[in-house]
Length: 108
Length: 125
Image 1: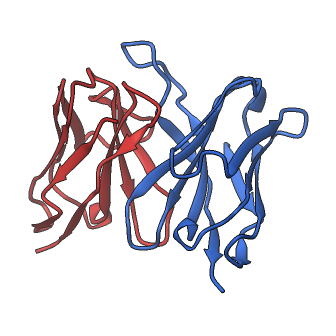
Image 2: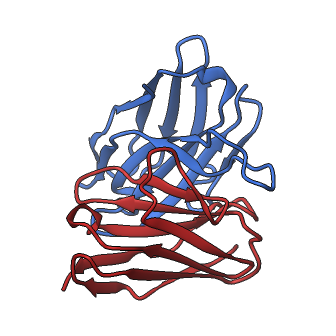
C-alpha cells in the first residue's frame, strides 16, 4: 500500500498570502496524484489531477507540482473561501487508492 | 449538471446490515467507473470500493472485504453498497464518487471528479 503523508497538519496563513502544502508518497506514484479541497460539512472538491492539471472551474491561484514521491499544492493570494482542509490522493498503485491525512489551512 | 445523491444511511446495530444507494444524473452513468469513499466525522478520507463501468470488476479495501458488496444498475443509473456484518468502526459518512472526466498524461482516470453529498452510517448499540 502506498502511504501518503501530508505536512503540515495545520497551516496558519493570512488572507492574501501564499500557502504551500506538501504531500509525500512512500513510493513513487509518478504523476498520478490528485488534490481535493473540503470545507466543513461539505463534500470534497477536485482541484488538481495528474499532479499539475487544474480541474475545470478551479481558479488559477491553485497550482500543483511534483512527481515521484514529492508533491506540492500552492495557493497564491489566499482568499477567504480557500480556508479548508486539503487532501492529496495517489492513483498510481491500486488497490487501494490512498489519501493523505489532510492539511487544514486556517486564518492566521 | 452531474449529480450524485446518496440515500439509505442511518443507525444500525453492530452485526446488522444496510444498503446505500447513489442515484446518478447528468452524465452517461454506464460509461464511468464509480467509487465509495468514507470519512469518519472529523477525520480523513478513506477509499472503500470501486466498480468498473459494466460491473464486471469490483475491488475493496481490506477493512471491508468480505462484508461489503458494491454493485450497479446501469439501466437505473444507480450505484449500491451493501454493507453486512457492520462494526462500530464502520461508522462514517459514505460518499459515492465518479471517476475523472479527462485522462491525465499517463492515461489514467482513477481520481474522483464528482462527489455526492454523503450518507451518514452510524453503527451503535
